[in-house]
Length: 423
Image (cartoon, rainbow, N blue to C red; front, side, top):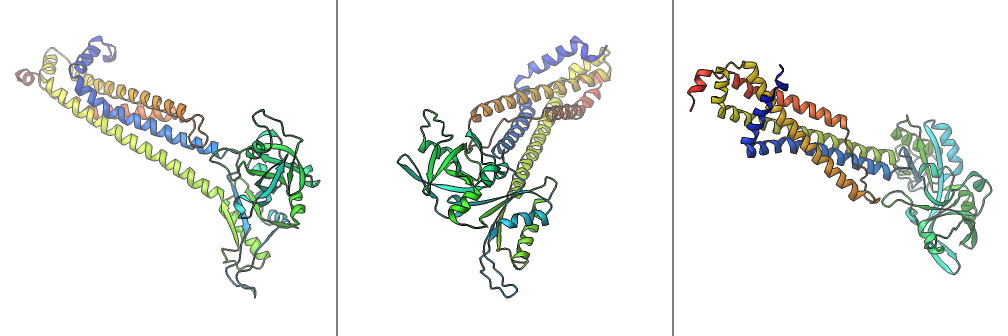
């Protein structure tokens, strides 16, 4: 009959552990702590990853933001310090010459990150200064606005130079009765002496995004007429194809613009850019590194705990020398003695691991409840891959078996006659 199904086997394990409660408890802490660290830290790292994914949801992370600056190198008779400009026709030129580009959105803006003052806006005697951005409909694909009323700018608004506006939530709260949830759609606000019909209201997630809810978006064509901007553009938001290398796309775009504007190929100052994909890659690399570090720390802690179990079992074997000798004298086979010790090692290891696992899951549940409605904190739904946990459990049990062989072999080598003489 297999040793696993013998009642006496489990009774002996129970009595052995019960007679050494403190020692067993302290031994189990090592393995349990390792599994707890493994589960809780891995889950926390995943929670951070989910949090940043949520924070950047609606953003095209494979995007570049490009603007014009001044040259820093004289070239072909032109002095350094020459002011560069972006033009609307550059958009089609770039799409034609850089096939890795998926789509481009031009933007002009006042206020916000541009360094220029915002625009005065008013309604029913209330006035305030807010950021104003002229945008294309495709701009909402690059940085999707969470609309709480209405819609975003469309192609008809753009081609018709319509006086329509999509306003941020703060603008809405100032000009409309937000407590009564007044519907602003179809109502107008005054921007620079012109009346604009509100077609949408958007909300910006706290802690995320390049816009804020103190911004108003209007069609770029309307913005151009208001400020007589001609075909000048403040910034291009460029999204690459999914299979393209964003760094190479960024370099190609700049080289095309340098060639068109007779700028030195070595001039790094003529056109400024922000590579969101590069920064997002650094972030995901950091999170991956955290998960790897967690796996290493948890595994080493578990290994240390399993080694501690082996040491404790060696002491247990020494204390039970006489008992083992009696069993051998009564006809117990060496394999039965070995399997008994190995089974004891596995029971302690597995029990410790399960306790650590449950404690880790409990901590993750508390963390999830504490951060559930904290949009500004990049932490969301901390989970663990159960495949990884079961793999860790399997490795832990195998280690318990392997390291448990040391005390098991020592128990087998005890000769009955010598054991019976032990005091």
